Image (cartoon, rainbow, N blue to C red):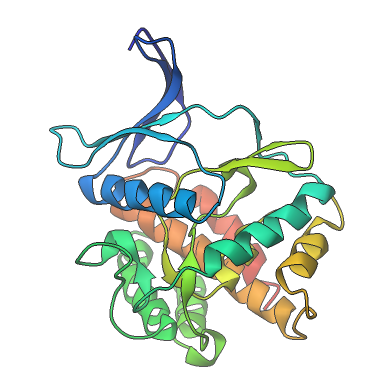
Length: 268
């Protein structure tokens, strides 16, 4: 590397924009070996299916410092126009069409991806309730807030749906776009087998009408009548997952997540 510029990332990884000796601009990511293995597999699998992802230059999950190097993709992160939202919906349909086995996130499952955990998506969500206990024990959630979240996670009727392959953190900042064109979908370490609403609910558009444009493209035969309830459930679920992951990896952005959880609960 001849240049190194740190980029924002998750508490459990290190990400930087780098220039290689060849002059190629790239993104370097150091993370846990399992996460590097999963993301390397995901990038190659999605590329084969025509989903726009960064080109893999190098991947070494077994290295002393597990890492992944991908070609830097030009494009704006986090800026998804209403026109681009329709393309997002079509992209998600392509992503969700990949066959999966089991339920849960690949980084948390034994065996090579796309092998997930055992059981159903509802059973995986119930497991999040157990992992939320230590977070509440650290006084990050009040007893009343913890009890409310736990009851919702254990309500299997909210999560009774077949699993599809999901990105797992399908947020606008993980989409690089140019106008109405999506240049690349990045950061696949959280991919796995889950309800499709996890990805659909994670998209937080700023431009009015964008979410409807995405859903129209994702559901060409018509948006299901119960879509608002599924979206609300999975917005809360993602916020709780993010809180659990942050706590378990020793991150310090914990109390800041609580207002978002309280706001999501108010919609249920």
